[in-house]
Length: 269
Image: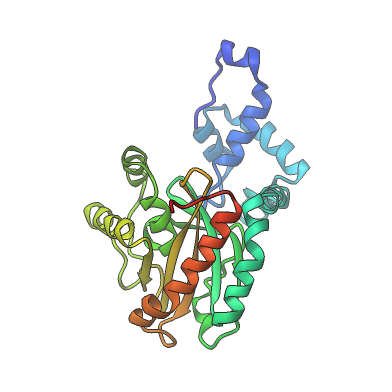
């Protein structure tokens, strides 16, 4: 993200704030640690300017230095901001009791996520202590990000996009083999998303990780748009794919309908 000087923009915005946020945005899941020179190249600043911004952000707690490598990572203040935003989301507050009840009644982990670019972001997670659960937890928590293309919730959220928006998101995907059955081709993913639209749900059979199966359905807003997705995640030793769809899909869909109606969705009667 280049933040080169623009006089018209500077008149209406804070250039320092813009540059500070641009620097924070350069740190991603694939680039968790970066040096001053790397950051400077990413944001289009001189090394000395980048160093001043980084020093300020570090002092404020938004960045922290990894002592062995002398490179930088996001600091705890950034995560505090993220969790505050997630915790303030009305849909999470509305959904939380229903998601916990679903986890309690099924004995499986229940998650909720929204789409951000080509990733999903977890906004709620009700973990189960079922046998085999630890093997598929993947250290996920509220705020975790995963690629949308290889997750059941991601496929639901991608399937809910308009054709133009879907094309734009898919173009940003860096396909890679994550589990034994990961979809790694653009056309195969688009075919899968057509099936998701037709069925109203998405399944994942070890596409993200070995042993992990899940089923996901959409949560809709007042206008009928897909605003989030919820899923049930299970270990393959506990539930067959047929059982996942036949037995667990109805209770998951009922939960999603209840949440959707509480956020204003009114299905046609």
